Length: 243
Length: 243
DNA sequence: CGCGATTTGTGCGCCGGTTCACAAACACCT
DNA sequence: AGGTGTTTGTGAACCGGCGCACAAATCGCG
Image (cartoon, rainbow over all chains, first blue to last red; front, side):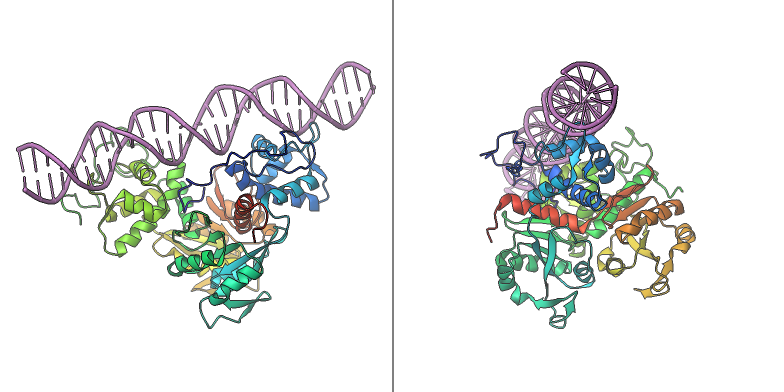
């Protein structure tokens, strides 16, 4: 799923349920190890929907309702949730608060996770000030840039730091996630520095392919490419500007 | 130019054209209709790599080299390109300039495509000023916002317009693609307005699920969710904070 | 002109993911 | 307590995409 690397790695290791047998009615913990990739990618969306419903005062929700709100089919949602364990009551639905907790646990968001942001241009500033991180279990914890003129500037209560500070800041927080919002020309060098500093997961917004060690996970978000894909779909359905 | 290859441009190999030459407004062109989804999603990345190589003065490239640069396996790249037709010369590789032209054609980027941007907050500004759109066949053509205070403001040479102007601006350009960078609370209303104005493809940056007619295509980019997915992978590989 | 080196194009088996359809489980009502 | 209606959980078939491996095609060279 990560387009920037041949998805050869990350097969599911065969160490399965050590202590949790297949049907523990109560916590004991979901089996994170053998969760399908596609399911994991949808959990954050479910989480958001569930939190939204919780805020609205609901206590339970059916797979049908949840699926509609999350933009998937009910069967898919049920199978996804079933991978977490048999939470949910037949004839009734799912306990929202409980499910929220479970998904947060699986996603590793039980405790707030610190994120570093490298490259404080337009996009970096937008991300630093992005208000969509509330309730996501994530928090932008440090900003970095290579340009001396930007260093020291305060954005949203955080100072822009020199890249030289990266190692000790990463170690201190500690930080394991980072987002790269530099120009493409700088992205690979920044990635290298992040990796040596100990960051193990990178979200790359720069329009280029990053080379990283096998142990580091990279996801790529490319704004131009997303639009180009849309352009293709458009072109496919309406070959000439028929409208 | 590659020796012994017909000039790129209006000359198309007639091999498969008789099998299904339907629906492409262009004689013998690539069969856009039955192009696998996954392949189409990778074409923009290939396109970028190819343009990069072309700028560097290269004229041909092997599947091995291209694949490495694009972060995929060579077999996958070859199969992807084979869906466009049998361009490429065995024992030699692919003609870069020709391939660029073909992919642009398939993606519908032969002519510059106009994109509308709705919601001129931090993220919207970043996108409006984003320099990664050069050579993508896309151009931000109009900016819209609901806030009267922002209307008239110039960003990157473009004025911020009122949403009321949307219908005639969309019709005039014309515009079929739009990106939504409003808060989640406004996104659905904006989407509705876009659809009625005639926009048929939407890139949604707001953290919510949009409901649109069947005929409209929506892609979603959610910054928080991307990070949450990374968090999961991280959590899976390093269950307890190996921090 | 033929031979070896190189690289494309693709048939095939495999695998993860999606969908369908239904039995099992539970709540509620009488 | 038992019957009824609702909703979950999941087995099984299906589908699309991926990687392997190799034949086919082309080039360069002696």
